[in-house]
Image (cartoon, rainbow, N blue to C red; front, side, top):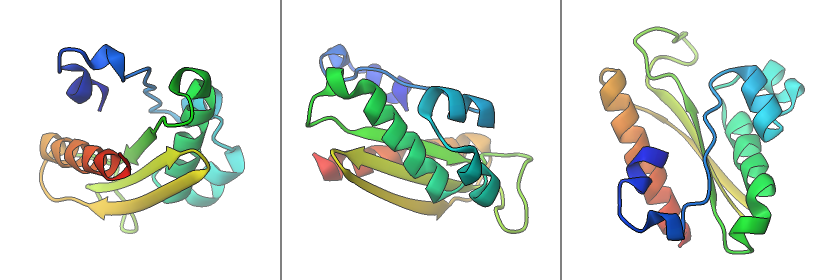
Length: 131
């Protein structure tokens, strides 16, 4: 996500920070995702995405001010890692602004690159809706 938005000149005027939290430990440490959420719902879940977005917003609130938006994405891009309940291509998104958080899950087809491309496009469309 960060690469997609910072490839535009002048993005430093509105892009403040990003977190890459692949592991559960990183999600807990960097964004404050609760262990109980990870245990109950898993890393790829709307509950986890919501806590990731909320945590990112809390950590950046001073720099973002009241109008800032935090985006979180967690998913399984493949080629491995899928399960029957969460197959490859399952991606959970969350957007947080102020006290409001919105989340949703999508299932994409295609290889790892295609899942990632579709995820970036959907995540950024979600940000634009809030703007």
